[in-house]
Image (cartoon, rainbow, N blue to C red; front, side, top):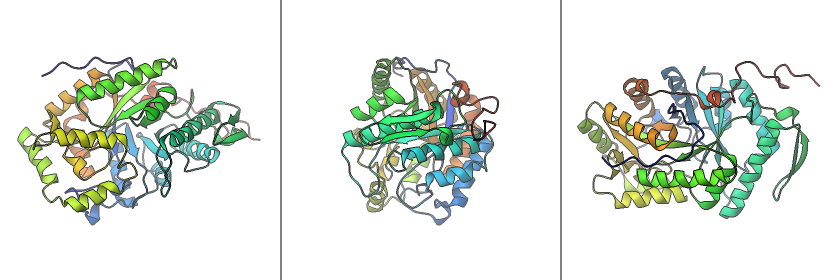
Length: 387
């Protein structure tokens, strides 16, 4: 086996990792890829079953994605899910520019209080449904939204004069439950504008599956960019799982996923996502095309999922021991956060939680990084002076 790439400078030096699952808010849960099954639709009932189970199984975090397709609105679902869960954090996706920034800050602050600090934010910088903007404009908007959110949670007033937004407002309505900077910001995107944004403002850079060498190259670049702002960031990996007792069974399960693939339906499903033409998706497509007939881009990383899905397009495929060893390689590379999923989501979450998760040493980032207070903080929605 080849050498493990050198780890970059990261924020969380401890090898403890945050392990998250994925909640299907965007109509993407399948038994067979490209074959919609009514029982796996993105209804409130199905999605709430996924998140309650992930909470019970001991995952530290769960991604609630955002898109314009059949399924659940992210913030609405997160508010309801806050009352269904006990320990899991909600990694809630927001599309920058979709909601008036002060009201977005207030919405997120309300949610943070409902969760008592179990809120993380997944920053998305993409076109809004029905609109097209150039990359520079989209990231300008995202940069301004992030700065307004940070002011909202940490300052006495929002005083902001930007190209797209100008505000002078009190922050009493938008104070977060979490302290020392407010909820952590997770972000993914590999274009130059995306990398610059994350290096300056975000806490966790999320990557989609690629070869170890490519992941390491991206991590080194982001680490160096963050250093120019006197910052350190953490790195996360969003990837699927197929865990079975034997390697042959795992590979058979991968083949089974594609056994009823309708290529036209698969392309339609893939292209309905707002990120289907993003740089990250195109890079994964390129890797899959260079793979052999078995679709493995490197040992244990199977890219077949990308045939029928936008976004994350590969899975770790193997026995519990093989999957654990691959995760350990990622940890040694400097990756500290994982967002896993599998098909169907409920069944695969149970398999991983039983066979691999107990072997991992885990942590909650918000607690470890001093964002989630041990005691109730003084805010306008807790014990602060009522005005």
